[in-house]
Length: 219
Image 1 (cartoon, rainbow, N blue to C red):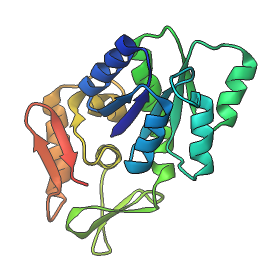
Image 2 (image 1 turned 120 degrees about the vertical axis):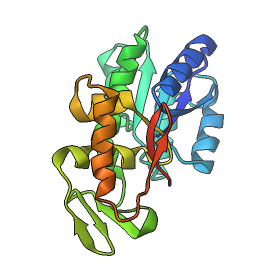
Image 3 (image 1 turned 90 degrees about the vertical axis):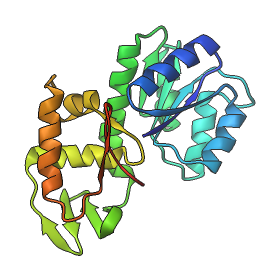
């Protein structure tokens, strides 16, 4: 899961980057709105975190509005010290999904990031996602298939697979599994057992083990 942070307060930007990377995300940081604009056009991100008052010709609101006009619909969260209702309205009208008001705790940042990803990830992709070895996943029917033959999964296995698909190309840590799938802490051993049960149902296993970290699916 790739996140772009636009923030010109260096200490805050570094803190956010390190915290999110420790949580399993791939994070890129820029401090200038024009750099962010160019990078978003050149590369692909799953979530944007924009400070409103930043260096450049455009503030965060204007930058996101221009991206939306260019049909770039990547979900975005604004980081701001603004609290006036007109400012908040402006942010939502420009295409933002949520706000984080400064100063904030990094735990709040993580919760808001996870919530936006959960609500918007599958809404922004095609109905059928192609996976390695000719597997496909239908996001509407929540159905995994191999060569058009459906594979029956339990509710827990489906949730684990969806999290892996949402984060494909990046590691899904044990913390991410218990937070997103179970909603409470469970032993890593139990997570390994559940992933093992899922893998047993795969004729060709596309889930990679990342020792000591978690699991991933290649892009």
